[in-house]
Amino acid sequence: MKPINVGLLGIGTVGGGTFTVLKRNAEEISRRAGRPICITTVADKNLELARKVTGGEARLTDDAFAVVADPDIDIVVELIGGYGVARDLVLQAIENGKHVVTANKALLAVHGNEIFAAAQKKGVMVAFEAAVAGGIPIIKALREGLTANRIEWLAGIINGTTNFILSEMRDKGLPFAEVLKEAQALGYAEADPTFDIEGVDAAHKATIMSAIAFGIPMQFDKAYVEGISKLDAVDIAYAEQLGYRIKLLGIARRREQGVELRVHPTLIPAKRLIANVEGAMNAVLVQGDAVGATLYYGKGAGAEPTASAVIADLVDVTRLHTSDPEHRVPHLAFQPDQVRDVPVLPIEDVVTSYYLRMRVDDKPGVLADITRILADSGISIEALLQREAAEGESQTDIIMLTHRTVERNANAAIGRIEALPVVRGQVTRLRMEALQ
Image (cartoon, rainbow, N blue to C red; front, side):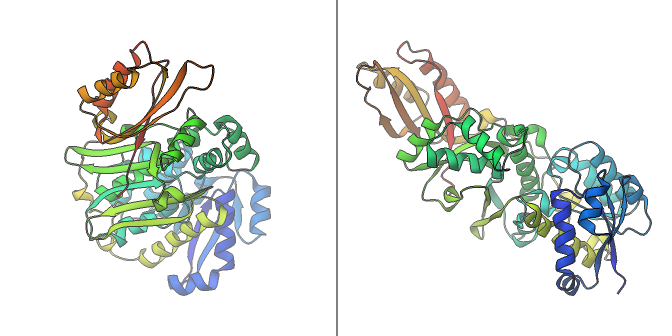
């Protein structure tokens, strides 16, 4: 059968991996897709790099807009990244009647509603498995494999940089800044790691998963985002003593009043499988009403793992590109007219448990004062760890784990505790999830 012609925009790490894997496994991929899939044109500003990667086996250009306008291109693969020119290219490709495959989580989280509406109008597909968790097929699992389920919640370690940093902090007892430098030296962290360490990258991915899981629009601007840059190694050590691990989680949970959508450092019981995901690996835990808990684990980044997802999308689009658009799997799993504008709840309305660490004067009655404030706010204590003051010191740490409560109540109680004359400085507060 006639080959599918692909225009590749961007031949950096993922683009190079896509070209390499597609060439290496061409026969196997063709057997699955029903016809050959050929990258015929590559657009990149660095033509020398493009020439080196492709070995002269594709037309090269530094004009990406020429690729999306080429009538011989069936599918455009966007691997440029960012919100700016990538949006213009994707929308132009759709307007020109071309299917799109993208790994651009930022683009979809911010402009996905516009992009999917345009694709629906033109009867083309936008595939984005590689946008979340690299080579882990979590989008297909949520969109197709779990179709029978009412998804109740999902929680994911979906940023390898932060997971590597947290693993190293726990294993070596080192402060955040020192481990970040190590991650940069090893290539796990960018020179400017802000999107990773401040949770923005994970929030992009959590936004996409929440839309598919619950049939809601992309609402990145409503997500609560908190990173790991202020996390203290002492809290990782205390959590370990109490039987917990700290991970940066992207969490989406269905509630009667709306949807929780949040990213923050989270204490997880150490016996949970997801708590033992170490290094730069990713994992997503999904709770469905029929299937129960399912866990998806693997490499969340890298040239070939991400290329695996890009090419899987190419195969899907190749199989379906001539089919009636109404018979394709909807972009967000739910039929477009069934996507519901459910509100994302503010963080003050979130219900969870808490880890509290307080630096206090080592005096009688301090613990009683703190527990009284928590009781007045309707917050009960699950576990308590009180350190003896070191010799010659007059202050010590009190660490508490609470039962589940509304964040608004926790904030009020923390404010009253910080006002006590025996409490020194701010209370360290981390959220906890049992994930069961």
